[in-house]
Amino acid sequence: MTLHNLLGISLEQITPAKETVRRLLDGAARHIADAKVGAVSAETRFASAYTAIRMLADVGLHAHGYRTLTSKPGHHQTAIQTLPTTRGVDSQVVIRLDKLRKQRNLTEYTGDTVPESAVAECLAQAESLSTVALTWLQTHKTELL
Amino acid sequence: MLKKRQSLLNMHQSLSAVLLPGYRRRVLGLLLLRPDESLHGREIARRTGLPAGTLTRELKRLAEVGLLKQEKRGNQVLYSANRASPIYSELAGILRKTSGLADVVAEALAPLSDQIDAAFIFGSVARAAETIGSDIDVLIVGSVDFGSVIDALHPAQAQLAREINPKVFSAPEWRTNLEKKNPFVTDIMINPKIFLIGEERDLA
Image (cartoon, rainbow over all chains, first blue to last red; front, side, top):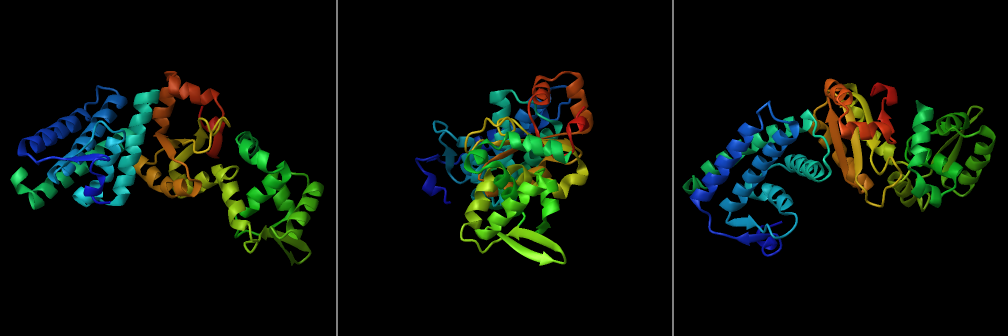
């Protein structure tokens, strides 16, 4: 799947901007920190870690000059599933991230309880993706940092 | 436990029940989904919970039309799936997606079973209220981590052509939710389940 093929379907083209990258990276870092606050519910910590994952996936698209069309359904899915293209993320990781996305939908729309195991996995993936994002930017797009 | 599992399995067999009469479905479900196993009549009777007399006639008929293979070992006759049957793969596919569904999920979790106290299917599939393509909701109580469960179940999704949504609770977390009467957990407790590992009393 090339990103260009998804233009108009789930992606649109943008001009990458340093400020946007910074905002998304800072936002992801805040959400990762929030996901570690033991005093709040597992649902909130999970949602926070998941938001960080989505923001970090969006940084990947942004750095390539794209963003998801939020007017189209499935824009979270697009951001996650383009990670192998935008960052060289392993497909095994994408399988896990996609399942976390599904869990997030189940939780938000049916009120399912979030187990601690899901919070732990979501947080671990968010932290790992954060490292991947920074390394990738430092190697390929220093001008955006 | 086998008996209970069998009765719970029957609950969600509505689709395959319409397609195949009861005895045939159980025999084919057992043998076609384990094509590498050869079993004798008594063993098949035990595993399917069917009376030996009726079963013998059923096995003979299935062997006559080439769906099963018959081989003599000593004074026993062993039966197994006949992969050479022209409809073997299609029939096995139908069984896997209907009555064999729980077996496929249980097999996928088997490598993690030492870290799992109990695992079961809940939701629409367990209630036999599923539609084609309903997600399979799986709940696991144990020390296994969520990521390993996702990895283990992933290949089974393609095999069943359905999404599997696991939830993994540690044993203490599960107990806390039970004691606090968490609505999600309470709802699961009073609704049908298809056990894959362990049994109902492991949850209390």
